[in-house]
Image (tube, rainbow, N blue to C red; front, side, top):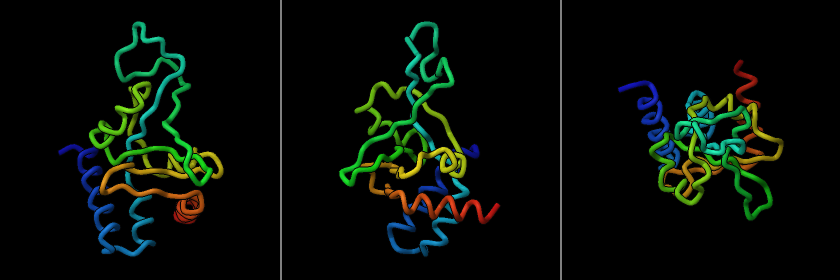
Length: 143
């Protein structure tokens, strides 16, 4: 098993524990900060010519973000690329993506943004902007 598969399995187990109430929120947050996630992206400059599928031509790749009913944006991420397949069918322009560490993603989120991890999945979880601020603060404290 490679480290991406191992990380994906660890993250899925962490999410299962959270949903079953088997882990305290502080422990969940600390462990989540050590995880890697899959971030779907689209490349607005990619005209599809001479570019392998799944690769971006430029450094302008944009992550999948959606607006919530509560009025804030969320970045959509997944525990692994396989987990994203069904959801991404609704967003065909997001034909690429990459694996990133959670702290890297948090440091690049816009102010007031949330995150949706594995949306529409049983083991999914949504983080509102306040929770994202708490995660980022915890990460900065642990550095």
